[in-house]
Image (cartoon, rainbow, N blue to C red; front, side):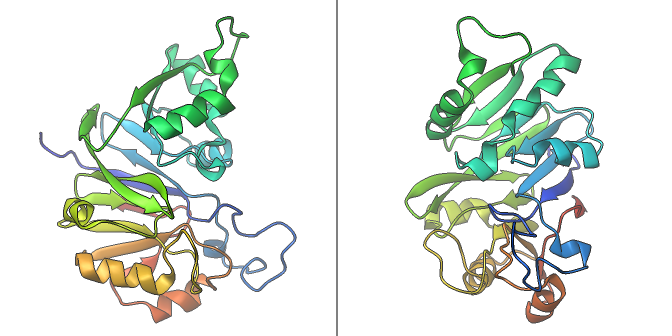
Length: 258
């Protein structure tokens, strides 16, 4: 199918604690630069006909409010960690206005977590007003939501399988520290790549800044943004000066059109 024009909004670009981190007075957490304030990582992907979100973070309600999002057709989940799914309960606002369940796309591991954490949405006798969810189990097989084609990209977060997603010429990967060669082939040819870069020091389950740069260079993507950023990485302005011209840190509110 043809690829529609896409509008991408970065709803959050921070790691699980967000920035500023509770109780921290480091230079990043106390920065006056709004680009150093980061909600938990999520994006909104829109065409003229379709609107979908990748992950419902603990900041989901505020992310929807500050982007004035009125319509949402589907939620895609990368994996079942709380900083990527804890805000799902607030999907019920969209249920109320559309009068239909929200389509949820997730692998079986994430589905199990959704059913466990939001058990009341799946009860035989539901309390009025609970979220209405329509679960769609996905694997590595491409699928389509509305007019937006979706190619899942399997990556690894230490030992946990995580899905990144390619939407046409845009690929979004978060919470990864390993990508196998067959999955790299699915990324190659993208015009824009978003990749996680937690900090400069080694981490058990996230790419470091240098590892992310190396991966972006290997994949030869012309425009690259880093996300899922920790306050340990450093100031936005400082780190961007250290990066190649075609690679920059994403920031909350960044908008791309493809």
